[in-house]
Image (cartoon, rainbow, N blue to C red; front, side, top):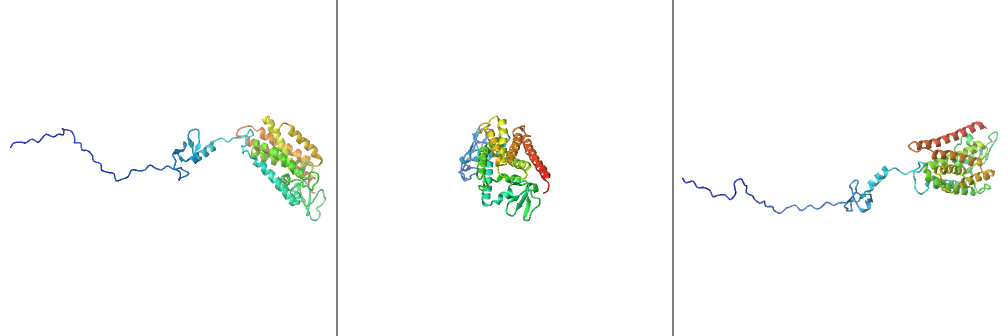
Length: 333
């Protein structure tokens, strides 16, 4: 039987036939690009990212940075990590508005308004070293026995709050030579000195100086003239003068214009000796000098707040010791 050979194949040996793939029309539509929106405002489309956290941010959320833009959250975190600016005396820079000084002035004015409405307010909260208070609001001192209708009053009888509250009361127009000028002059000097002191010390140190000086003035009046009664913010104002003088020596500058300020206050202390409590002025000045020196010359570093706080505690301890000593010296009536 004759063998019949197959026809030669056009595909060479070892080669595979290339069959073109036929692709039909796709049933799935082409995917749309993802919509990018601000991470804080979902209704705003944007294409800028924060260079720190890669969040998408809209124009309202963009914060200019050295490279690109930052989002508000990254800006807040960056502020927290930055070292806060402080003054030479370690006080935190509080801003342009003297909030503490304004608050002190408002407290004095409100207390004065309360005095105008009820004049017995002075008797209840003024600085009485030793005496008796009657039901009519009048005080009597150096009496041998408590008459009917009267009760013991004053620092010597445990009413220590008078050492501080008296610094927020002032003479009424009906109370003689000073009248309403008492609060006007004190508030004028407080507004003159307060903002400068507050900006340099910071609010906390400034208030500490003011309050310690106020108690220092009351303590001096109690020790040197225990039978007297005195009111007014003059002791605290003189304390600010003492602290300001020390600060200006430390800074080698005087924002308020030379030593004339201190000379003026010394003259005020001498002139007012005839109708005001020069003891309170002197005590406030000395307390302000002591606390101001602690603030001004505390060494820089982590120990500075502790040294400054220690100065406040030390001066306060001395004042408390003086009050205790004078109370024990007076003894029971």
